[in-house]
Image 1: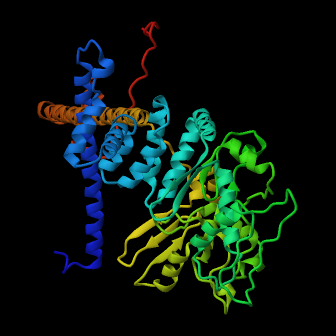
Image 2: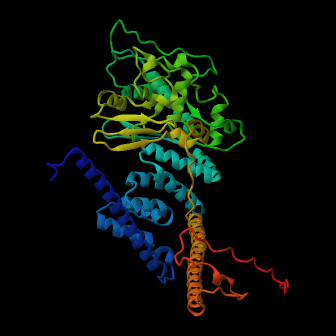
Image 3: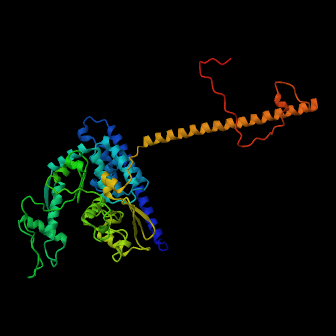
Length: 532
């Protein structure tokens, strides 16, 4: 079927299949939602004396039918019905994007999951904001969708988010489940700042072994948990007498042990604003958590580095200030669809740095730097050129990627999407939250103004045409009177004081396009007596 198609045609087929798949899922979810309303109406219409034990709700009826039709488990069927209900009642704008094939199902599912606890009265604002935002993106990752959804929820329903976080904090727990293979799984529910520090601690201990240790990084992280429980250091497993591994020395109490990157505005840190922040490795956090982390943290102001320092722009390695700005601006890898963290990515020159002649190549300035994970950095480096992937960075930080088949993908920085200060520094255009009712009223008013202006122009055109016809008719009548005067009086002039024009030469009965009638007489104001 596809043996004779070129790569560009094959990618077109992939994109078309994805759009059809999204549209098919949207149709299925719409059908499930309609079935739910039918069964709900049936259940509510049942007249039962004791519905507490005999009533089967519409949701339960629908789940049973969907499970049988799709050969799904009861839990899976309930998830499908709940998602269909959410799209129909809580996220109709997002559902419209899915039906049009403009977003895929994983993106829609992420939005449904992150908004399931939002108050129903506030959901129309969330729905409209997310649909407007996602519809302007050409490339996005799951991490970016989650960040944008969390930011919208915290901006619109901040009090409820804080209550839900406090409620979740009271339910923190550690669950150990035995596995049949001699292993066990540990599930921990804990606050995001503590989880981030715990993750950093495991990675730090895992990196204390030498290069000859046979374990993978993930295996060493698991062994680090065992070492923490036994209150000992993580030992190296290389078994060599010349092992160079050294445990991490203990630091004084209260000293900073880990580097955790948190992005927040100055107003949030000082308590003058409740704007959300961003925690590396987790995502969007509320203002209270930002202030908790800032109490014992080293604060560094984040400003766009100046490009006036020519010497630093001619060095290959960016300065610490430039690198910090680029990572906070990008937050994730800038390749389309990649959500790997920028803090573990490479800082790459969009226009390659010329090591032989730094003044002739790409300079080390923010508008020429971007974060790429190692996989996509290698892809850009070794599969670039006319037949590979090509990137072009614009002054506002937007990166335009061109694929080997000529497709164009636009990637905007995630930091500018979350923080207005970063967007202003990058020169990003301000997002405009659409109000369809206001836009419709604006279009209607503009159309009416255009019709009124056109009506006035048409009235003027009709007045001019009428005046031209009258002028031609009066000229013809006067010329006819002049011919009759010639016939009856043999060329003698008329002596009548009422038509002196009869003695004038014959007038041209064709007028030019530049001819204009005399202006109309001024109108008499209402209530004034005429001047006679």
